[in-house]
Length: 444
Ligand code: MN
Image 1 (tube, rainbow, N blue to C red):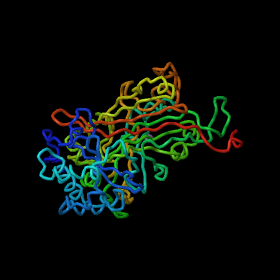
Image 2: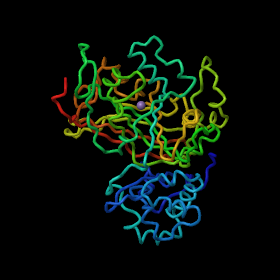
Image 3: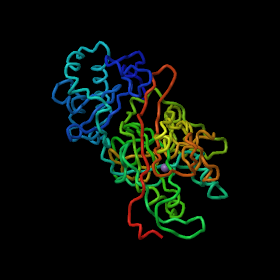
Image 4: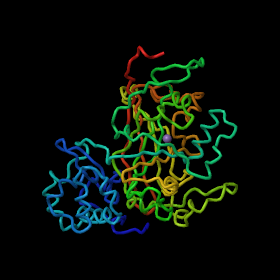
C-alpha cells in the first residue's frame, strides 16, 4: 500500500528547470492535482515547478494510454470527483505516465515542449478554483494540545473531553461555504457576550484562524457499510491545507451541540491536492499512546496504521497585517508545528466516521483539527498564542493582536520532508479578513 515506485525516485529530475529548484513546492515527485480557469472554463491540471500541466488541454494529444487515458477522461467535467471515485490504480497510472512525460530523457519532451503554450501555462497567470465539488465536510479535533489548552481557557476541570483518547472527536462542518485560497474572508456578524456580560449581535469579536490539514475522500462507501481501518487508506485520495476560520466570540456563546455560526461563515483550502501516493515516502509511525491511555478498540486498531499511519509534514502559519504590508515588512511566522502531534491518524478518522454506517462520498472533506503541538511556538491559532487574549501577540509593525483585525492576512503552508527524499510542498492557503457587511441597524 505504501510501496515506492519510479515517480518517487529522488534522483528523477524534470526537463522543466523550475521543477528542479530546491525551494519549489512542486518538484516532479509531487504532481498535485488542481482546477483552474482558462478562458472562462474549468481545466484540471498538475502543478510542476512554476507551471501547470493542463490535463484538460492534453485530452486532444493522445499522450496517455490505458488506465491513465481513462483517468484523463474522468476529468472532463472540470473537477476531480469522478477521478476520486475510481480505484487508486487509475490516478496512479496517470501519475506514472505524466511523470514519464516530464522527466529528463522523456521521448515525448520535444512534442510537449512544442505545445508548451497549450499544455504548460504559467502557474502565476491562472486563477485557481476549488478542486472538487465538496458534498460534505467534517472537521475533527485530534490535537490533544489544542484541545487541552482550550479546555483550560474555558475553565473546565477536565480540559480534555472524556472521549478524546477513545475516539476521534469531530463536528459536521458546512461544505457550501468552503472557498479556495485567496478568497476574501468577510467578518461575520453574530451573537456573543460582550466584556460586561451583555448579549449582543454585531460584527464578531475574537476572529481566529485554525491551521489544519484536510483529506479528500476518494472512493466512498454504501450506507450502512462501514469502511474497515485496514481498507481506509484506499479511500483517502489526497490532502490540502485548511483554515478553519473561527469567530470564537460566537462559538463560545452558542456552542452546546457543537460549532455552528462561529465556523460556518467560511473555511479556506489550498487549491492543490497532494495525492496519498505522492506522500508515501513521508509515512511515519503515529504519535505513541501514553501508558495510561485507554487501549484502542479493535475497529480503530490496525498494524499497518500503527506503523505507517502518520505523516512527516511540517506546517506553518504567518500573519501579514495591512500595516506590515504597507511598510513592506515580510509576513511574520507565528506557528511552526507538525502532523506528528495529532493523536489520531486520517485513516482512523475515516474508519470512525463510517463506523456507524454513515456513507462517505468522493470529494467529501475531513479536516484534522488545529495542529497544535506541546511547545509555545507550535500553538496553531491566535487564541492559544495569546492565552485567550491575556498575552497579546506583538507584530513586527509594532501592532498588538489578541484576535485578527480587518486587513490581517493569514498564510498557511505545509511541507512533507524526510531525509533521503525530495521535499514536497502544498502551496499556500491565504485569506484576508474584510470588514463585516450587513444591516448595522440590527446590531445591538
Ligand atoms: Mn477546526
